[in-house]
Image (cartoon, rainbow, N blue to C red; front, side, top):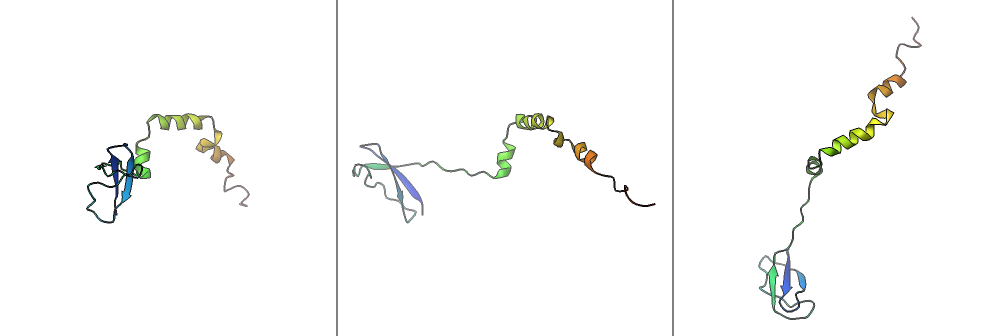
Length: 94
């Protein structure tokens, strides 16, 4: 069931109507002034993007900004965790 939009020729008000078939009327009564001189207009559409398409549209500077933010963080370095780990051979009797 599509929603059709009409613009009033008298008061220029935009009205939306949920129509239960795919053959809409040529004009409807304006919801603001009640006049029947309306014409159907092309509605705007919503475009939903996937997370993948949003990520691909990110600016290339974004990666550089993340790298710069991680540069001051010692935990961003993989060697940080290696230096904290104890070797597996420690404490094992020969």
